[in-house]
Image (cartoon, rainbow, N blue to C red; front, side, top):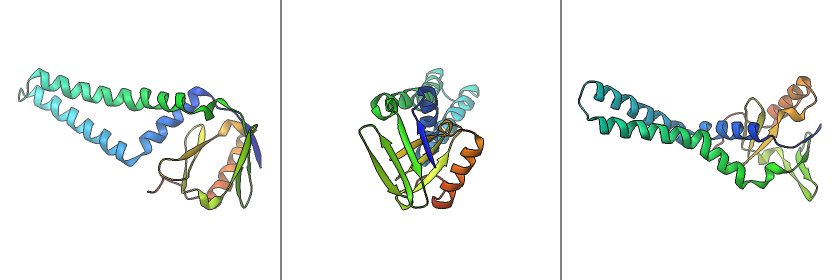
Length: 163
């Protein structure tokens, strides 16, 4: 199976959000900051802390939200020139290859640590920080997306990346 694609900025930004939110350390941090924000609200309402302490807790929550939802995905998108190019990608029983006008690279399926699926992409994880986004809209129709999903599931473990 071969697909041809370029990247849509809005879809890539959304996929990067999924990537960051799926990281266990970021999930834990978000939970802790939300607990802290709720605790500061309760303490403020019961007049155990000053308005300044409540304001600092609220600002911390807001900064975290803006950072992971807007700033971090935009920075990654801007720094990665990859998202500006067009690619061809071929999948077979032995592995997959990614081709570009300046060259290409092939990987065996075992090179992937895991994969994750978001609304617009398949995220191929080589390790906990290296990943490749494969757009679903590169497929001709939903049947081809399903076929690609089956190929991937037959060779790669689903879930968040290990290590």
